[in-house]
Image (cartoon, rainbow, N blue to C red; front, side, top):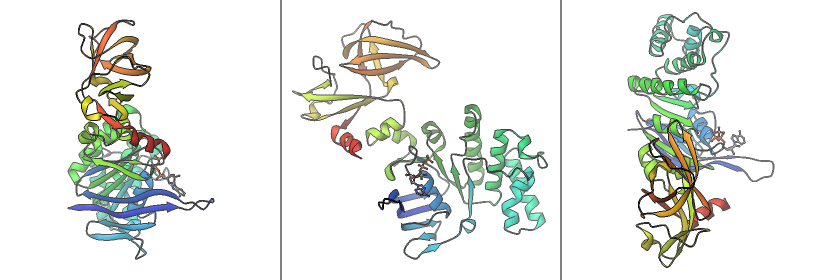
Length: 364
Ligand code: ATP
């Protein structure tokens, strides 16, 4: 069943110059019950605005939003169910815990607003504190707690009303990397226990990949691609998604006589299986640094030289030139070449994007 549905949702913000900013452009989205769904994209692409419309903090310029089978926002009907009546839990970037309230009262707050009985409040807060590992800290004030514990208070407060939908806007961005990784698991565990639907907003691709069942990649207010992390990573629809989802090399190429040459290096073609299909086109070859082979004792591939060698904890990065363009290659620590070594490189799983889409990207 769909838990969150956006139909033709657009949000425009007026500007002084008269031309409005289209923060969200005609979104159609169906998020299933129990799904962890991430909004991923660069700063300013419209992630938070979309989330705020789902939460009910922002009206819609056009379209409708449904939670379960209930319409909660409609531009045509001028209908807006207030945020507190949408059955949502929310955690935002800033910890947003109240410093003058102890842990218990911070978590109890939404229930006090709902005027629940003392017994109901005690039961629900105890349950939320148990699930977020905060039991025993009821009387402590947030300033005496670590960043991770403060973020758990925000999580506990979000789950205390037993919401069907959780909206998380960069909830881990104030935490150090180790704690961030740990909290990802905690959020996933909570989700599995309570089976709420999560929208998770982030600009961190690895966080989105680790957390999500499906992700939406956005750019400048537009939906670019929606899919599972694996499908997005393996089949990006364009260069933008390819580059956004991981380490990438982009080699500009020209095609002549059925052969692919790197721009600035016409002497030697790049041997690729699909050269024949691309007659007369110009474009870009995309590849991940760990999906390129280096050979020193085979003529297979493109002949070049090691220009740079960088030791990393995860392996070695080599830089080589294809024409005038630098390509980065990641190998294990065993695969040791020296600067100046003659090598041949082979793209294992390259993608091809036509120049047209690139040009369109530049023009925008
Ligand atoms: P970030 O990752 O930096 O939080 P975002 O993807 O969440 O960015 P939004 O905050 O949704 O992006 O902003 C989308 C666009 O809408 C931006 O161009 C932003 O400047 C504009 N915008 C957002 N809120 C308002 C507002 N209240 N008034 C005018 N313009 C706004």
